[in-house]
Image: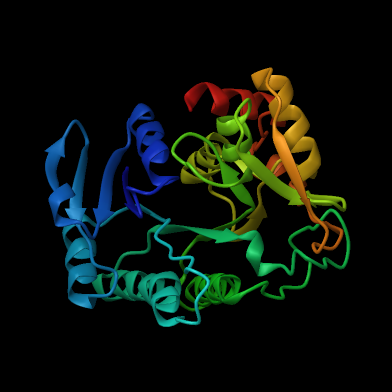
Length: 295
């Protein structure tokens, strides 16, 4: 089986690539960085793939004819009002890939990495949030993920693709050197001050290893096209992240509180993924400990 991974050099793409090779799959990594292009060695190769160039996409699809495409390529944005690069990477590139498959005459399985940003996670209608929860994009990035999901549905319904969507919360782990979790573990025992909300603020987090597990399990999944939440299955407060980090590191963390952030809770129901693709996330504290030992 040949698997094409877009965004294969990304935070999630790198460990997924390693896991797929251990499973004896042939893996093609699509990269826009020509310096990373390499010939096929031990069932894997890196090829030039420009998701903004339809000819580049069609050439890759026609030459390699993948059985599975894992679409990890994504742009989140920098908080500015510039939206076109986000739309192009998250939606136009996905559409061009599936359109190229149609023109070449193949129907690979499509695995699309979506986000908890498709939900308004500041004000969910109920908890835990399941896949039937109304979609109200939190920001423009979330909107592009909703559009990406709709593209998957369109090609599934009209062109007989098998498409699988993973809605992923905040990801932490080896290779991500930013964010609250990283900062708590990295700077425990130092004078660096970590700012957290004063009020209760609960979110869902997942380790990169568990994301890779879900993606890997989907490669051989043969069920109907579907959408799956993946996450820890329980929420954790930012205050508890600080406490757990202190327990793991044995060091005190310097904290300041932001009184302007309102109380908020959001976490995902992962029952569907657990039942269908045997997704069982690692216990949160263990994932934190594993991450700390990698820093």
